[in-house]
Image (spheres, rainbow, N blue to C red):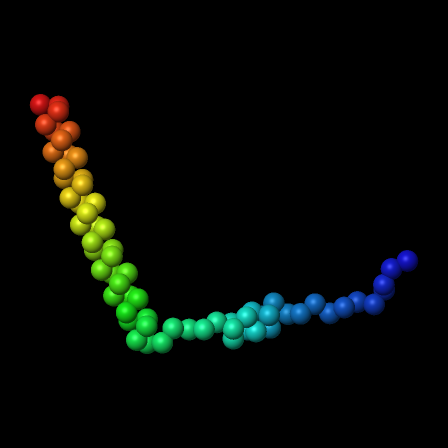
Length: 65
């Protein structure tokens, strides 16, 4: 009727370990460059949002006076 032999399932942690070995980690220099880029872009976007917020606040105050 069916296959009665049981196949052993691979362990979750063995599979995790084999997948972890496939990861290519960035080097120290690459990681530093990417981190600096993320911080710079975050600061620039934060400043742009702050300026836009001030302009919109000024516009709303001007219209409601």
